[in-house]
Image (cartoon, rainbow, N blue to C red; front, side, top):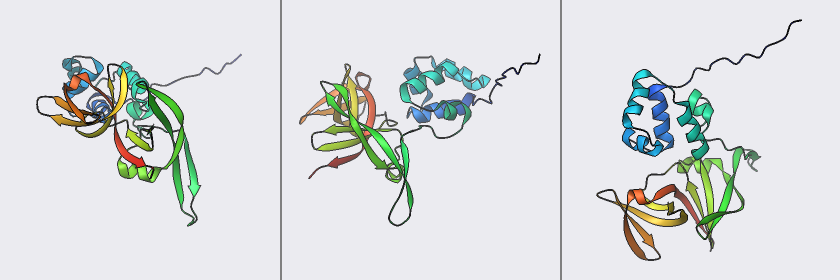
Amino acid sequence: MQTNQLKIEVPNYISGKDFLKKLMKVTDTEQQQELAAIFGVPKSTLATWRQRDLTPHEIAVRAHLKLGVSLNWLLLDEGEPFINSNVNKHTTKFEKEISIFDIDCFSIEDGKLKNRSTISFDKAVLNELGAVNVMAIKDGQNTFIVNKESRQAVSGTYLVDMDGLLSLNEIQRLPGKKLAISFNGSTLTVDENEVIVVGRVALAMEKK
């Protein structure tokens, strides 16, 4: 009796420098030293991946679980880096088809995210903002669209994690790896490693 045996072939994985480039893109880093610090590995390990053209699958899984990056994109160079399954097609009155995203919307209560609902957004607007992996934060009469791919604080309003508590704050980078953070009109200067940047506000909407 013949049986059909399932065979799963080994894919043509992205490896070496191409894999590192993708990791640096989704972590918004420019130097391999920064990338090594994010994943808690020696810089020499990254050099080994590059020189030996290796694919560190465990790192890929960690990036997927933490950042939501697509494994197909990261390991196989297929599709988009971030997949939003809540996408609908809509035809305007001018008979133009557009893509509508449902974005998860949260409020911040006692430093924690509380799920509020979803808001619908035109994908073209997100593309203009250069933001694909996004979330919305509702704060009083304001709604902030946060780009979760932008995790390097330079200048602007950021969703940050300090001591395990989340908040939206104005941040300005200073020399010496320092950050000036605004708190209700006051400014505090801290080391950059004291703050975890979750994302940068790409768009603020205020109800008038």
